Length: 310
Image (cartoon, rainbow, N blue to C red; front, side, top):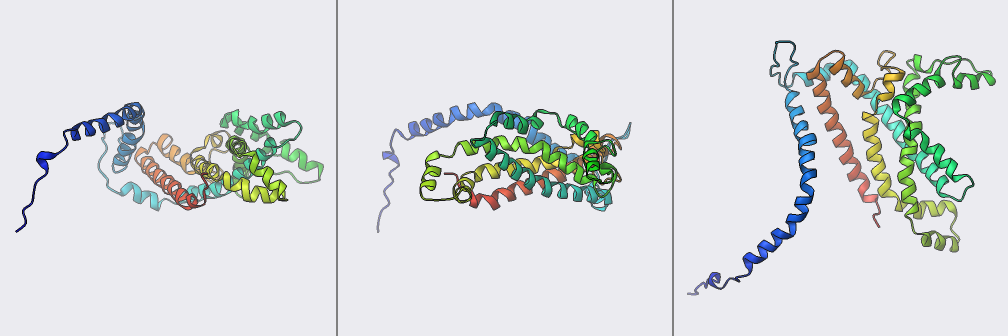
């Protein structure tokens, strides 16, 4: 019968020292990250969990405290036709502004990265809308859209076109908001594309030119694959902005006419601070957080396979 020999008495006396060295190795990074971790927990994760908790209660009013309602706030949200209308507006707003802004930003980055005369002026012109507050951008575009006297109608009158009321028509008001957003955001995304284009080694393009490749082939086979990490980053940022940037609505349409230009966050603000139904607004906040999380994770998983990190 075989006997089992225990090796415990012969264990290395340096085992504890090795474990302590590993602990000391990971302690400095943890200490360096601890302020950021504390800030994230204090101002992001704990408030988010508290928001989810409050979404199951009613709105406290006066001396009447809030009461547990369960899923009633979410049921009201599902049964609310205005909620579905503004959500549809936001979806249309997102699927039009995001690709248009990214494509225009990439074109502008290519222009300012090329050997064109007057590149400093082009960079200044493309980036100028970025430094303007969105509320000020809304006021500027109000003069463009002004019926009869605005820039658009003034240009149209030169060609015999009738006056328009873009912000006053239910059919065109959302597209007017879309145009403002594209004009505002494209210059911001251009900066990231410009940094990505300047990071591409010149040797690759020079070798392609020697092999007889055209500009389109170089862009498709070299430039585009190498900037896919930037495209992924910008697409996620643009998606978030499409759902949270609503400052121009306050100065331009205030969600009208008949909620045809209202976006989800604006309707959330209205429920919280105009109608003072904070519980319903909190439930909408939870929905918005979940929606953006699903879209962001989906974008990363779908596009990450096509991203070239080297």
